[in-house]
Image (cartoon, rainbow, N blue to C red; front, side, top):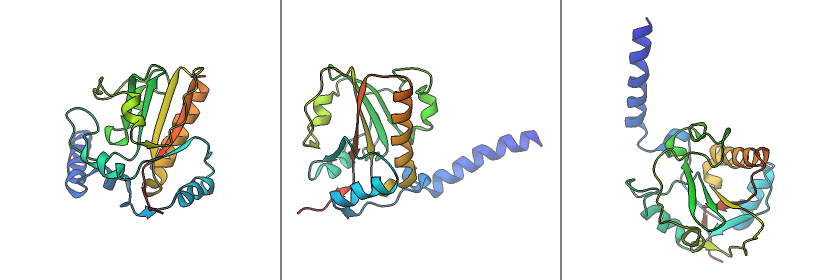
Length: 190
């Protein structure tokens, strides 16, 4: 019976891959709709998430993110639930997306910086990230790290949980970082 159970697990995984062609479908993430910043803020408030340090993409950068690979060797496409950590010098030291599997695999709960599950683009920097963000604040020199957590209203519970996990764990480890919540919804033009 144990052998049969071992054989069923891979079969279930393969079936899910064919039934759900993207990790978004597996996670239950909806298709994005245009919203306003007010809707985004109200979403966070409704779910008791702090609205400080919320950032938004510049116009048309949603499409840019969809056309770029998440990491070297990946197919182009937006990973709307992710986290990036940069050193205060702007060097990318950590990049995670829910498509890579459980965040536990990064060691986030035990160590800092966490381990990257798959290789990151060492040429990508905080300057590259800031280029696509609307009204990025002036950086505070007393922080050793800059953490950016991607989220969107269309990501539902998985997006909210990543924000909560990152904030909680970095705070518990006393990591000297500022955490920004980058909204990746498509914004209505006003």
